[in-house]
Image 1 (cartoon, rainbow, N blue to C red):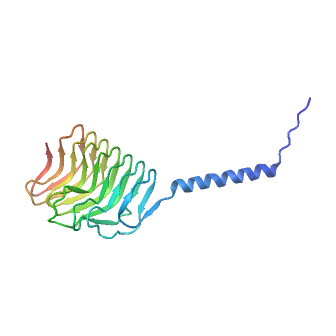
Image 2: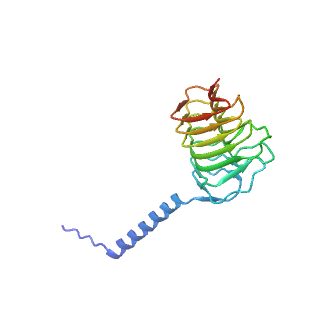
Image 3: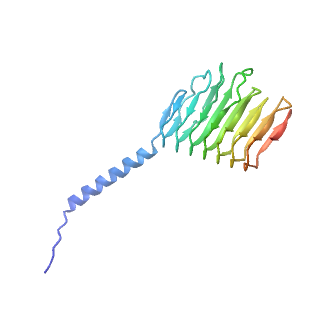
Length: 219
């Protein structure tokens, strides 16, 4: 017996075109970013957030970031925070995220805060790089990794703090801090980097300049 298979080339071609359209749609959806224009809460998982303009000065915290598996790109815009109240540039509680290309400025020199340009709390497996942070406040940190924030990586950041700690790790473990530049001046109690009640953190290839305090503090 002979079996004949007849294939309609037109149908096959239409199916191929449809498949190509579906692939293009999926690729565009995967690469699409969510534009951010002002301070607020970012909580959707798996997003790529892009700051596309300088936000208005924040009275306290500018961004609260609770999303997981996301990217937040600052577009090299400046975030001015804690103008009148205690706050962070970005307060992070999410995990498996990337934060990059931000400039932070803590503008209130007299407001006590114990906060940071970026502050992590119970936030793990995040990557932070290409960050600039400036503060003249004696209790404001450039980057603050705190309270069971583990397995994070910070690199290629430029921190200038007049009176406090540039990069501070507290009660957190297995973080990698490398290839950063920190400038500290003024107070004798200030330090470029600090490691407090924390274990198994790795600091290497960082450049710390301190004219009034310590290059590194360990407690």
